[in-house]
Image 1 (cartoon, rainbow, N blue to C red):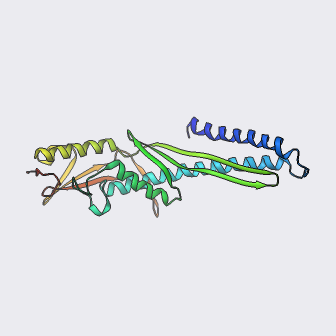
Image 2 (image 1 turned 180 degrees about the horizontal axis):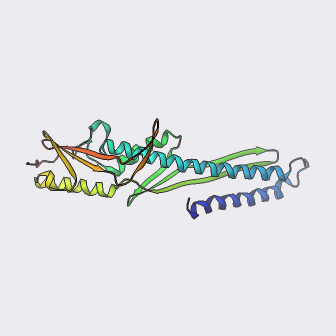
Image 3 (image 1 turned 180 degrees about the vertical axis):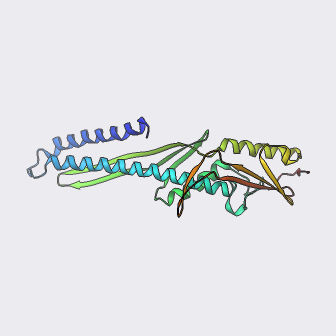
Length: 237
């Protein structure tokens, strides 16, 4: 966790203490019922803070695990909808919109941990996730506590979307110019009848949590049907 991530919950907590003390001085102190003790209220403040930090820690772990699962699933599908069967076809539902498709896969993985992101952005191969604020409420006698903690996580992606976007541009340009696909990139390719298959090994190891913990470098695989690319000018081998 970076310094800013530590500073923000601490700041929220101290603001909470000041507001609670002010509430006590202005409201609780002068009521006739003196049974409410500030010691119990302080204990509840600490409890609220601890629960907020615990939730933030769990959220970061959920994001990390979800990102790894998303990278694995995204790579298996070749960056397109699973119904496309790894096939890239331009000007169709199977044209790769890599950032959008990755966010969709990641969102579904994150939901498995019970977290729903308010906002997700990918910029220069890093991802920022804004989660719903953690909110803690407690009503005691002569004392109401409400504590909110914004949860934001930013991580470098362990998959090179910049490289994949560049590859997408190269492939599209190659198809538009009618050049053989295997001459347009330096990536590993294989010809299977009318299909050109691209295989790009991930540049980093990731941990996958299924029935067992597995370390792997997912292989990003996609195919181009050279007879039906979605681009008017066809590839010639």
